[in-house]
Length: 220
Image (cartoon, rainbow, N blue to C red; front, side):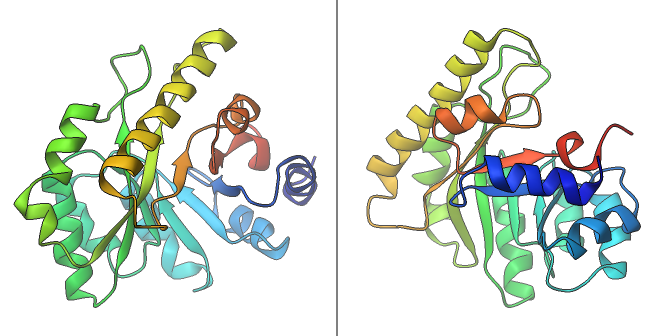
């Protein structure tokens, strides 16, 4: 199936309230343009160098989500254009995003990434670490970032019960943080979870953003 056909199928399956991030890592500009011509606008990359290289060759109205582990020394290159950084996992990274967002006179949307998988290879915060960030003086002084929710990656497994449990745990974290820190901030409303293999379970468990690569662009 073509990129256009895959997107049409996803649009028909996934409720319109849910954002679909087309994960375009390793994809050439032409493949991204195929999705763009089909009307899609939200794209995700997980390597900063690849995103920096592609972005100038693509239309300016693409909304770029950065979804991979982000080194602090790469923030300055993304800050002029990135719509959302979904993978914030430290106060240091948040400070750097705020610093370069200010230099570019814009507010960058961020999600706090949580470690919900049983695999040790995944990055992310636990609730205690997230609360320490949100209660810090440094965070209180940040004016150029907007915390819009949470992100997590489930274990790479065929065990649907485990995947569902991990997604449920992220929804629980989001509800806890909402009640404790963001009760009066409607922008804190996003739960980014679910990829090509498990997005249907993620949606059932409360996802508002799904990150789909293979399901749109096919296998490389």
